[in-house]
Amino acid sequence: MSSRQLEKSAVSPTGDPIAEIKARLDIVDVVGQKVVLKKAGRTFKGLCPFHNEKTPSFNVFPDKGNYHCFGCGANGDAFSFLMKTEGLDFAEALRVLAARTGVELQPRPEATRQNEQRAELLRVLDAATLYYQQALRRPDAQRARDYLAGRGIAGKTIDEFRVGWAPDRWDSLYSYLSGEGYSADTMEAAGLVAKRDTGGYYDRFRARILFPIHTERGDLVGFGGRILEDGQPKYLNSPQTELFDKGSVLFGIDHARAAIRTAEQAVIVEGYVDVLIAHQSGIKEVVASLGTALTERQVNTLKRLTRRVVLALDADAAGDEAVFRGLEVARQVYGDATVAVPLPQGLVRLESRLDADIRIAALPRGRDPDEIIRQDPATWHAIVDGAKSVVDFYFDAVLGRADLSSTKGVATAVRQLLPIVGEVRDSVQQALYLQRLADRVHIAEQLLVSELARLRLSTRSNRSEPPGEEARQPRRRSALDEYAIGLLLIYPGQAQAFLNELHEGNWDLIESQEVFREIWRQYQDTGHVDRDAVLKALSEPLAEWLRAVLRREGENPPLDERVLTDEQERCLRDLRRRSRRVIAPRYRAQFQDLESSSDPGALAEALQKFSQELAQLESEERLSKRARIWSDLA
Image (cartoon, rainbow, N blue to C red; front, side, top):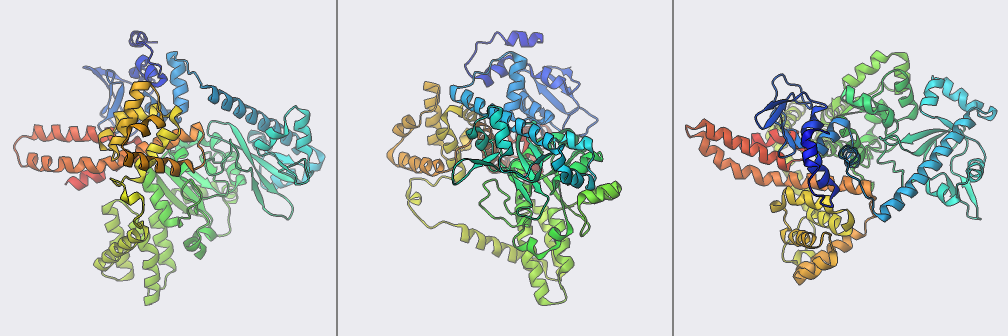
C-alpha cells in the first residue's frame, strides 16, 4: 500500500463499501499498473491505454480520484479503469479493489443464502460434467468418439473444453448424482433432470454429446447437447435456470476472453464444433451464440473486451429471402426475447445503442466455419477480415439480387433498404447511404429523403399511445424515468450505489425531479430507501402515478443481483445519453459569440469546459459518439 493510500486509510468508514474503497484507494497506483505515469503539477500524465498516441494526453487526477484522456475522451474512476482494462464487470472490480484496500464486503443475509444456493448448483453441474466426461470414455460411447474424431476434434481439445457424453438411459445421471448426495431438487434447479408426470425424475440429456457452457468468469452454468441419431431437436440446451440464460452466455467465452482482447475483435459462429476447431487451430477469438439471436446482453459481455463483433453467417442464412422476413439469425435483438426485430434494422439499432461495431461475414455457400478453418485457415482469415458493416452488407445483398431494370424491383429494394438507412444515427453516414441508394436505383435523392421522412412520421404515429389515465397525470414522464424509479424502489436494498451515481451525475436533468429528490431526501435522512415513506411524502397525484409505475414495473420477472447491476448501469447510460441533448444547445450560442471575438483563449476554455461536462454525463461506451455533437455545433 502506498504512502498516499496509508494516509487515506485513516478516513472514517462510511458504511458504504464503494465510498470506503474510493476513500482508501489511490487511483495513481491503480492506473500506474497499466500506464507509465509522470507527475505534472498536481496531476499525472501518460500515454492513453485506450487509443494509440505518441504524445501523452491521458491525465490522472489523484485529488478527484478519476482520469480523463483529452485525446479519445475516455474518463472514469478506478472502478471503470479496472473494468475497461481487465474486462471485468462491476461486481468483479468491486471484489478486486475491496481486497486491495482491505475493505470487507459484508453480504446481506439474503445474499448469503443466494450465494450458498448458487454454489450448490455450481457444484452439482461440475459433478455432472465429470460424469459425462467419464461416460465418453466408456465402450458404449464409441459412436460419440467416432463423431468427434470425424469432425477433426483432437483429444486435447475434448479435454480442454470438457466435452462429454450422456448415456442413452433415462436415469443414469440421476442415479449417479443421488449416490453422490445431491438432492433431486438441486438437480432439477440446475437443469439436469426433469420431473415425470407419473412421479420421479429422468435425465434431461440422453444419447447426446455434451458441450459444457461457461460464463466469462469460467463458471459452468449449463450444457449444449447434440444428438447423434435421427431425432429432434438436433441441439438441446439446458433450460432457463438461476444460472443459465442462453440469451446472456456465449459458448467458448471463457477460453476466448484473452484472445478477443488481443485480437480486438470477437467472431460469433453458430456451432459448438466450429468453436472447438477454431480454438484448436489457434484462432481463439471465436465464440458461439447457442443457436439464438445476438442479444444486447451478449454484446455487452463482448464490449468489455472489444467493440468489434463479427457475425460469421453461412451463405444460406445471409442470402435467403427468410433473412428479410423472419430473420432467424437475430430475431430477438433485445434481451427480453419477446420483441421480434428484423435483422438489418435490429442490428443497426443494437450497434448504435451499445456503441458497438457489428459486422457480417458471409461464408461460402454450403461450407461451415470448421470445414473452412481445417482446410485453409488463410481463407477463414480473409473472410473475417472482409466482414462488412451491417448496412453495407444488406445494401450489397439487396441490390445484388434486385431487378433494378423494373419498377417493381426498384420499389422492393427501396422498401427493404430505406428502414435500414433510417436506423443510421450519424447524419453524415445516413446522407451518404441515401446518396448511394439514389445512384443505384436511379431515383432523385430528394425523393428518398422525403420518403424516409414520411416513413419516420408513419412509424411515430403508429407507436403513439392513445390518451389514457397516465396522460391525465399532472406531468407526462418518460419510460426511462419510470424504469429508474422502479429499479430504486422495487430493489431498495441494492439501490445505494445506483442512487449515488444518479445524484452525482445528471440529477438536474432528470425529468421526474420531484420524485427523485424525495427518494434522495429519504435516503439521506434514514440511510435506506423506503417506498412507503416516499409515497406518503408526495402529493396525491404524484403518489397515484408512482403507485401505477410500481405496479407496472413489479409485474416484470425479478432480477438477480448480477442482472440488476447491469440494468442499473444501462439505465444510467441512457439517462446520460438523453442529457447530452440538453448540453449542446446550452453551449451553441456561446461558441458562436466567442468565434467572432478576438479571444482564442476564451474559446479554447469554453470548448474544454464543454468537453469535460459532456464526458461526465456520457458513459464510457458512448464517448466515441461525441464527434456527432461537435458536428451539430459547427
